[in-house]
Amino acid sequence: MKALSELAEMVHNTKIKEVELVQQNRNDHSPLNALLRGILDNEFPSDQDAAQKILQVDATDQLYQRLRRKLRRSLLNAVFFFDLPQSDYNERQRAYHESCKNWAAAKILLAKNANYIGIELCHKLLKKAEKFDFTDLVMDITRILRLHYATREGNIKKYELYNDLFKQSEKTWIEENLAEELYMELVLRYVNSQNILEETHSRAIEFYKQIEGSLAQNKSFRLHLCGMLIQQVIHSTKYDWEGMINLCDESIRFFLDKPYKASVPLQIAYHHQLIAYTQLLKFEEGQKAATSCLEYLEPGSFNWFKHQEYYFLLCMNTRQYQHAFEIFKETTTHRRVQFLSPAAAEVWKIYEAYLYFLHSNGEISIPESDSSLSKFRIFRFLNETPIFSKDKKGMYIPILIVQILITLKDKKYNQAIVNIENIDRYCSRYLRQGETFRSNCFIKMLLTIPNSNFHREAVVRKAAKLKKRLEQESNKFVRAEIEIIPYETLWEYVLNSLSNKAYQVRR
Image (spheres, rainbow, N blue to C red):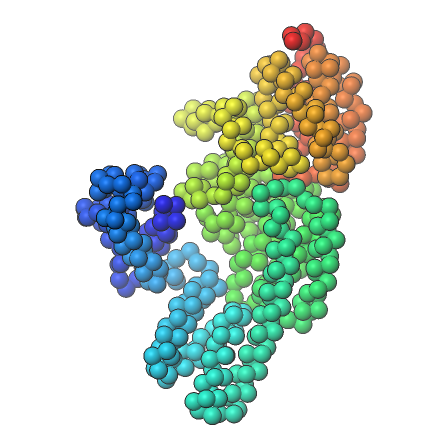
């Protein structure tokens, strides 16, 4: 049902030209339109619900299955009639969709021996494919053209022209695929984990050396995009944020020189500048990068949601909490939030917990009519984060910490003791040196709280050395994904939740 829902929503929200293949009239009470409207209005959580309500049969019934197939065919046919110039697609995306559609038409015509119109279409397509760096299309089109001029017209000059173009595009295509493969090798391990492996930096340097020569000789869009992504891994794994900013500046200049608007690499470059400025705690510069990035993003896309994460983290790390809450609301109420992967959805559950904590400390102002955070419950939150609860060196850390913060703020000291004792074993087992060292320090600082009977001055004394070690590491291993709020700031909230009155622990 999710795939059909996504297809229906996309067709519904994209302008259709020339012919309407799917009825969207609310006065039309046919089963086909009832299924479409129900999907768009989120009335059917499953196929079983749709089948029962519309046809009073089970989802496995042939009558419902035929109806479902008919709607799917109609929606897929409508894809070919998207009015791309009037949609939210950028210039290169529109060119690619139009080129793919015309290339399909050219191949069908050539298969039917309509060679004049077929070859004419190929020539027009080739100009557009070369302009927009569609290497795969250039390769396919020149292969057809060299075949035509060799076997049908016997034109040696044109055969050699298109044969050379084919070989050049094939070489570029191979280089692009290698760069893309190397980048995927670097990132595939991090889809469901925020933990960076120690060998990633050296592997990224090794991979970049394999394509460095190609990058110097070839101006290919996809090649330089993957090259930029690999270099970003090199800088991020060594926390070289100034180097990241300089790399992104170079990439922005390269892609702005293209004869078209290179939206994807530009938004990636601005996005990584946002990450770098977040690490450097530079809100104004980060906000400029974030605003520039949004110009190249389609709201509701995968990259838009990812960008919103880091824009949120910039605000949280620089104490712009009200702004962070506004970003949270904009993101979690977007109609496409339901299509996020489970891991991506869990991230926003964790952010909600931290916003709830800040709101309880009076840091965020929310109208009485807004129930965004009033429904938060800590035990439900723990059940809603099963993926990252297994990510022992990554996003499990902020999950553990926010539990303690909330119980301390609510003066539930016995529950805080249980949480802190549970975190003790975890800390010694999973968090030692490297990128989790700051988390190790902060958790050990939390461990001083029950040992000091929740007495503020005693906690300050016992945690002093650990706090100093934490601050010494502030320029080395700060990860905004893990430290949603910097530990130094969280420690201020912890101390403010305590008093100079000892609490007698009840066992």
